[in-house]
Amino acid sequence: MRKFLMAAGIGTLAGLVVTTQVAEPLLAQESAKTTDVYQQLDLFGDIFERIRAQYVEEVDEGDLIEAAINGMLTSLDPHSSYLSPDAAADMRVQTRGEFGGLGIEVTQEDGFVKVVSPIDGTPADEAGVEAGDFITHVDGESLLGLTLDQAVEMMRGPVGSEIIITVARKDAAEPLEISIIRDTIKLTAVRSRVEGETVVLRLTTFNDQTYPNLEAGIKKQVEEAGGMDKVNGFVLDLRNNPGGLLTQAIKVSDAFLESGEIVSTRGRNPADGDRFNAVAGDLTGGKPLVVLINGGSASASEIVAGALQDHRRAIVVGTKSFGKGSVQTVMQLRGEGAMRLTTARYYTPSGRSIQSLGVSPDIVVEQPRRAAEEAEEADVKFKARTEADLRGSISNDSLTEDEIEQIKADQEKALAAAKLREDDYQLAYAIDILKGLSALVPSK
Image 1 (cartoon, rainbow, N blue to C red):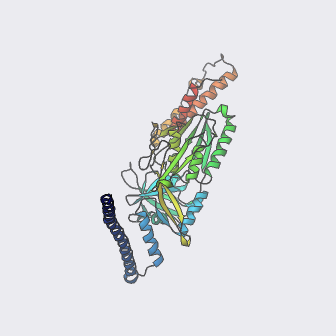
Image 2 (cartoon, rainbow, N blue to C red; image 1 turned 90 degrees about the vertical axis):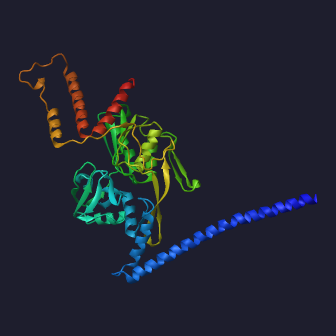
Image 3 (spheres, rainbow, N blue to C red; image 1 turned 180 degrees about the horizontal axis):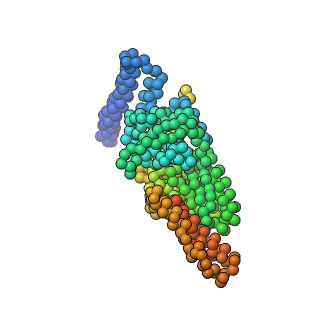
């Protein structure tokens, strides 16, 4: 028994020795890391003091510290940044849907400003700025080496003033100079209309107005069409929509779903993850749905497209989306400034992350470019003469006036559909899908 107790005691002592031997190096490593951090902070203080005392010109200490903070954040990823008090105020205004500027959503890539998408109806859109353009110069000054906020600041200016931006475009041999007149940007979050028997819902951004505008647009267009029975389906157009508020993306997705997960977010700590689910109530009554996306569809747009695609609620048509699958949290700081920090990735209901990959359409449809000569030929084609235009042609007396009028109305619809294919091939393709689906449904 004594031998057993002695052995147990020796075992316990050996265990304590081993534990101590393992713990001491770990504590030493942790202590070394802490010392390292303090040394780096001392180094930062030394550099700051030397700049303040010896730089060739006097510097503003506040600007210097803000630049250091922003440099720290922008080194993490393209979407983390420091927002000065003015920039934070501008961001709050933008989420309400009205602000001054050019009307483009931008990010930074390879040291240049990249256009995520121009916003519908804004000066940049009307001037011909396209998703994927790289802005290299503003009024002749290079943007290379500037932070995104600095580049955006260069593009700001009084309403009515002119700015000339130089852009590098993928399919252009030479850089393009585009003149834009700055204006107050009033965002119409949702534009709705009826094309034939299809309701088209064009979403330009995800701000506080988006879901209320969507709900009102669906109601208005269904009423104008003569009721839901007269509608063969809906097109949700998310092309060149740069995203916005996560809460609005969830509400828009929920507008077309009865149940199930919409999106989940996962941060560094698994406990910080969130899941967002749909509640009953499809605003379209389950009518067929086509979602249009392209390379300018980012962030919140991708959440909506991914959720509706995973639930097989919609057919996604167009080209691959932008691929921004990260979540930014805006944190208020002392002094009215703010910090935009990437805190999570978001995942579609099937568990896929689209970060850097984008949402792939179910049906890939490119938007063909039309040269001016092709456009003229198309206009001539739609005005071609027919038998009825010939002098002395024989009239058709085998039909009643009502039947003739109905045939003419059908011809006008077909002509309008053909014209739409010339103006917006991707949208026309989406509408044709809905026509095909409605043709398969037996009439009641």
